[in-house]
Image 1 (cartoon, rainbow, N blue to C red):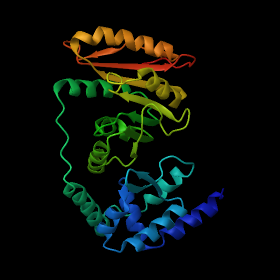
Image 2: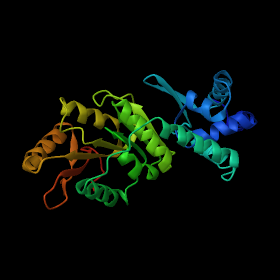
Image 3: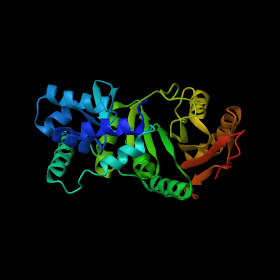
Image 4: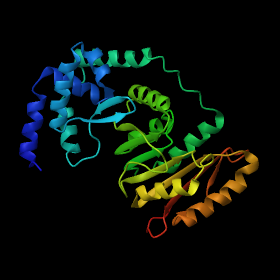
Length: 295
């Protein structure tokens, strides 16, 4: 591994080009494809790809595949994250070229014909309020939202996390979430394709794991809970959200208790939202052998 001085020199060499600076200024806002960057920048794809490779080689960007697209973004999890943030802070916020590039990127996303997200109903608004109340004093750290859909929970909580990853198997939902997070300023948020039964992340990688209304329709709910448990850091928290018909809420809550106990999780009493005519359950679980106490 390079020492800090060598790494800084590598970064500064990569910075020393106006095209690469424009690419960085765009990717700081979120995940972008080569096609989007090419259209925004007005240069040939081979030229843009060459600059992107240099930025990846320097460690200033990373790339990943999602379906048929390859996305580029600023790495969120690494030892050099703080150093990169200090460098990116040097990019002038009032640079007209950067502002025009960002406006073009937003225009491209809008022109893709992505439908607007559905408006939240009253019960969802109650849930969002409860989530804010629950987590306002909670350190979210590294967060993963399993079943992130259109990114509503990421928009709600992502800015308070060190990094936030949304996972969903629906490519249209991920595309919409990226467009929404770009406009919402979710710079530390990332979207990934993933199966909740087998997620491509390391054991104990996240401080906060959210099972986002996926258990009610899950064919293998215990597998999903065990996979979520695997991702938890020793003092992490698992947030369980479930939209349930009023007549089934007692039965589902009892089942949730059994699932969590079987998975070696300590479950705090679930909260019913709203308190009258509830439609949602919100619960917090921690590892049973952890010293953490669920809020």
